[in-house]
Image (cartoon, rainbow, N blue to C red; front, side, top):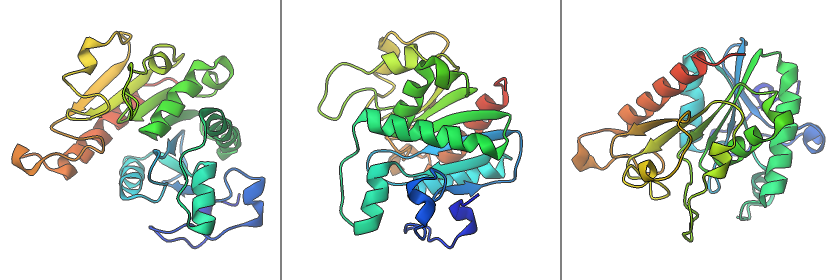
Amino acid sequence: MNCSLDKPHSRHGAPNESPQAETDPLADCLLEGEPGDTLVILAHGAGANMHSDFMAAMAAGLAAKGLRVLRFNFPYMQANALDGKRRPPDRAPKLLAHFAQVLTAAKRLGAGKIVLMGKSMGGRMAAIMGTDAVMAAEIAGVVCLGYPFVPLKGGEPRLAPLNDCRVPVMLVQGERDKFGGVSQVPHWPLAAAIRIEWLGDGDHSFVPRKSSGITEAANLAAALDFCSDFIGGLDA
């Protein structure tokens, strides 16, 4: 397959473009880790693409725990990489359509268990995917890294994607997350089956304040441990 694992790429730049990129959702992906029974499809957030430090650290950490990880860019980020312009995220239907294409294509990698994981917006899209009966039949679980409960402009918390998800869901959330922190989330009517793990003094990207005595590295390590434990307990 034409994954960018097999093509030169920069950690901070886009991989070399391929003529297949228009037809193959995996043409410009990043695939890490040894082949195995489990594949994690990791979706980026609204403002940073699959090459961001956060995405790279999560992918590397998951791969170190024996999981194969597939990173990809949503269409608007692919366009940004081509011309250098900064675009806002596509509307949800376009994001979901591309996510579904990636999921379908990823099945050829042969994993017995596929888990959808996403940072912020990517996690919300993963959860929405899990509410669809057809998509849910293809995945074992969903992990949301910094779930954006409250929209940037404020409003009611977005609970439906989580409560209506047809597969097991875990949230890994910083205690100080401005989109839903430890002082807010426990008061919202989330389904009891949803697993929530809190990272000490972490913000939306799990970064704590220096005064907390907690390090970003410690929070990242905890997040990876939570993910590994959750994924290990899922049925294929």
